[in-house]
Amino acid sequence: MAHWLIKSEPSKWSWDQQIAAGAKGTHWDGVKNHTAKLNLMAMKKGDQVFFYHSNEGLEVVGIVEVIREAYPWEDAGPPWVLVDFKGVKPLPKPVSLAAVKAEPKLAKMSLVTSFRLSVQPVTDEEWDIVCKMGGL
Image (cartoon, rainbow, N blue to C red):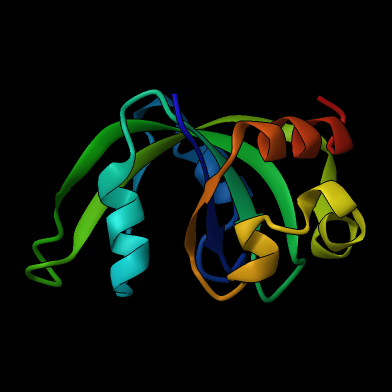
């Protein structure tokens, strides 16, 4: 199982909205960056994903799970894709970007090195560290 991080501005799609979508989940749209698209296409059903509030909040707030792998985004046309996620659980303590940057073991994390990328891989070690920082 791989780990990932997806970003959303809370004013466009928040953690609370993701949780309100329930077990049926929702698709992830708005990604029109080829690197982010390739990351979406690499996701597999069951992969765990950090949900990060970007621009407002700047923090990892929860964990979602891939429930449907990449499929064509009809409204945007090729080559863009969607992936469906369902909310799993909130982090008891959101992990801020500042906290991630302050942790030396996370210096190579994509959130630090490729901060503008909206869909990012997360290593197993990074996953464990951020989960611990978030109280899991």
